[in-house]
Image 1 (spheres, rainbow, N blue to C red):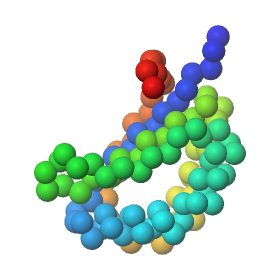
Image 2: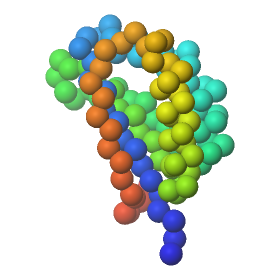
Image 3: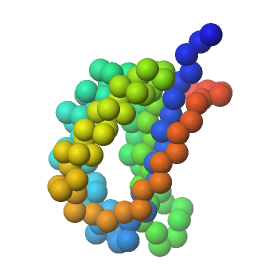
Image 4: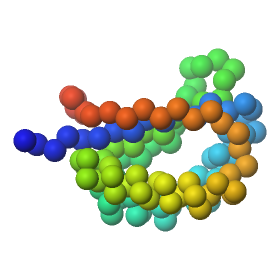
Length: 108
């Protein structure tokens, strides 16, 4: 049986544009090295997008894809470490809602 590609789609709703901008600054300052480690462990996509069709809301979506379940587990450890390392460095306030899935079809 073929290994399934795993996706992670997380929505972050911010209370203000300023908090969203703080998040972008945080990503720019802290993500390059972490992304390299994630790629080494099987992450195949990593998008940070600003959602523009939600009216006056300030929403970011992170979309990640992993080679397979093993890569997802390895990268999840990296994410957990990242959250512990950065919990006092983050200055933004956001509601975070993660979604996980198995790719059924890929038309790209």
